[in-house]
Length: 513
Image (cartoon, rainbow, N blue to C red; front, side, top):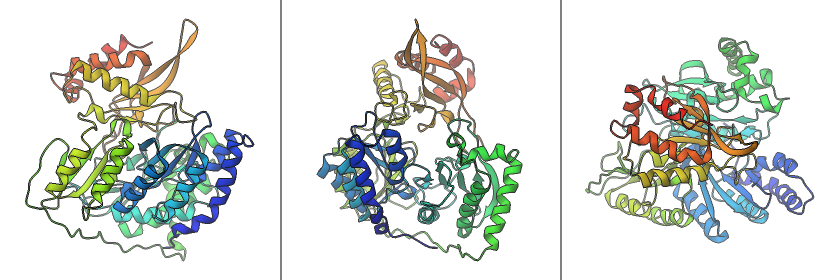
């Protein structure tokens, strides 16, 4: 497999600096700059006075070295805002143009590539965050996800790519990475092989993926990735940006079965070619044992490795305090074998900790979410994102405050999913409760609102798109959630929905605008 050394991308950086300087000088409009800067994993924030920078963390794995670089960049440049994204990357916000370029270049020395982090390119390859540590997973898919990430960097400048190409690996039916409805997904099986899904995705015209292959040997995954690219070249609508996503190929090919046939034809071409894409990988053995002490608690997970633990850290809205992230990095540098894993629900897992290390990390991350509801997912929101309609982070903060004030018990409300616009970065369509940015006319004036979705489910075998109920004014959503939580508090939200299936809709009817 051909791999690209991170330093190779340095030759592209002068162009970024030049165009960014032109943008801030008013010589380049925001649309032209957005079309250019996405290649570099950077966009101008709303208002055009600052940049964000997306640090790829392949498979959501943040090694101590990569975390140390991130912490040093935060300190050196006084980065005020950090976001764990739903694609398992780390975004640095509120940067000036020069700082964005400086961090981008320095990151290459730490093995962190930002290229292709936005725009019409393969995005960060996703992986079940606890792969290799979780007791009930089918097998450790991390090595295969990392190999896929390296291979896909070869397609950063390939022609006729979809507007995004998202690839995910799941190690169990929990389907944390939404492998069954990504552009290309590899779902682990109990026999140590993968089922492969293709042409799925959320947002406008959402589609669950088509199962294009079963019982695929892990060593063959790169053939399936190349076939994905060739299928889009043949059937993708790359001339219309609104439809330049792989999920539209299901319609172009006459439905799921027609797409499956088209994909398998391209796969046959790849296997018939001369390119050797076989992989021979093995999970690295973790040479670490416990220290003899036991730890338990709501944010502690026992790993399959005896005596080792994982600490669950979910900063509200996926936005850790920069100082807290730096403190975690400093502590981790003294913990052999420990590392951080990012999850698509904006949780960070601190893995491979002995008992004493677990207690240290619990203390450093104590200001994160304390309940299931507080682990709710939100995109960065319309105050920062150029295309965002609504302040999803502001809504989440208001809801958390209202629920805390109401004293609702843990489990009374589910993890909710908030997207500021139809792009579904907050995965609102597959949450038990989802909200998507909207607008509502009140007395002839537009008011901030969100469309409510209910009943979504992302688990493999239970995949369901949430049903759209209607629009709620943003200012009324916290009260709506408190009323739902009070109604469900005795049974817990899941059982309440099961035993009183019409109760949620009845409450919502009083809030819909």
